[in-house]
Structures are given as C-alpha cells and as structure tokens.
Amino acid sequence: MLFSAWAIYRLQRIRAGRALNAIREDELAADAMGINLTFYKVQAFALGAVLAGMVGVISAHFLNTWNARQGTFDASIAYLAFVLVGGSRTVLGPIVGALLLTALPELLRAAAGITWLPLWMTPLLRDGRMILYGILIVVVVVLFPQGLITPNLFKRKRTGDA
Image (cartoon, rainbow, N blue to C red; front, side, top):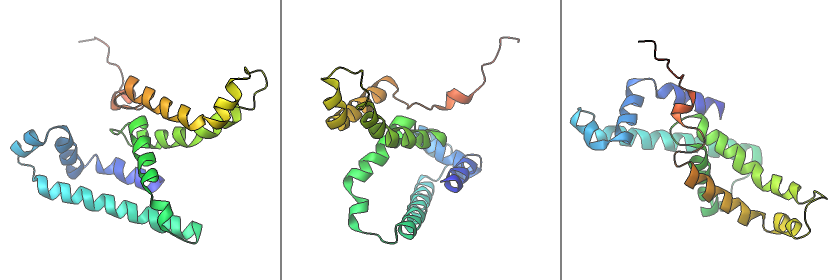
C-alpha cells in the first residue's frame, strides 16, 4: 500500500499525472489543450490493472490461496465506499476511508458491550450494525460530497499581505 500510494503521489507531479488530472476535471478542455485523451485513458486503465494485479498477487501469497469469493460484488462496493468516504482527489483519502470503514463495524460491535447504554440500543448495535454502517456511509457522502479528505485540507491559508 505504501509503495502504490507513493507511486500515485509521484505520478501526480509529472506530465502524465497532470494530463490525467486535466482529463478528470474537464475532458473537452483537456482535448482542446492538445492532450491525447485515448492515450492517457488507456495508460490509466493499464496502471489500474497493474496495481490490481499486484494486490492480487500479494493477497494470494499471504492467504496461500485465491478463489472467486474474494473478488465479489460486495468487495467491489466496499472498495468504492472507501474512495467515496475518504475522498478521491488525494492519495490519502482512500486510505483514510478504508481505515474508517474497516474499523467501523467492529467499533459498533464493541459499543454494544457498553453496560450503561439503554437496553434497546444494545441489540441494534450488535445485530443491526451493518444497517448503521450503511446509514453512516450515506450521511458522510451527503455531508461531505468530496469525501473526508479533500485537496484543500492540506493547503495553507494565505494571509492578505499583498
């Protein structure tokens, strides 16, 4: 994960990364500026395939097996939720989203064991934690449409010295 995050971070700072950012923001404007849309889209697809292949190889190595159940539709939706909640415009966003959404069901399960909670809340946290998980994803997506981590989060605020 650290290698791929570093590689994507570095990619954003070279010509190809700037072209991909321009295509993401406005395809028509990028095309008008002379960026070869087909070339960079194929390049992005190939890079995604390489990263997915690397993840599959590492996963198969550590699990000592690979089967079709590990690449289900549910897993794809979970990965998409990581990006939506964390934010798609930074390298750190999907990582934060993955950490939060992976830990959240277990935190809700642990919260069910708190003794001072009302009696009606304990079964809801224990048995209905995935419903709460879904509701929290929807709330975050509605309140933070760009995700929790946005590019503006790390920019310094400029003072009005000029």
